[in-house]
Image (cartoon, rainbow, N blue to C red; front, side):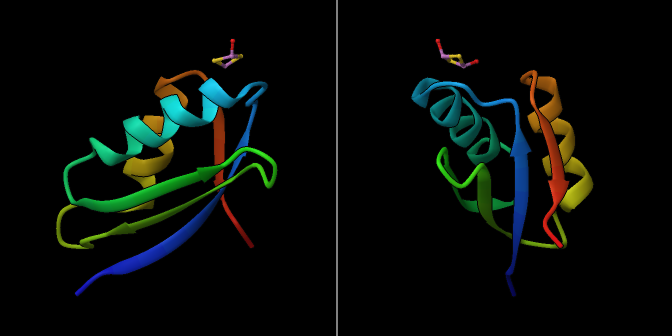
Length: 72
Ligand code: 9UX
């Protein structure tokens, strides 16, 4: 079973930022698909909830130097 979440990403200023975050999120254990949209300042992430969760995803983004929050 997979879950899908959308995150707001704050602090991206160029296309390489989006690529960095996308790669970082895809490396999180349990993530099956992550895509980042620079223009929308958001990320869509599919993951196995038995392996990871939104806290892990947000922490990974913060580790890369950006801010993240679950989209309302
Ligand atoms: Mo672009 Mo983002 O030069 O951290 S990669 S601003």
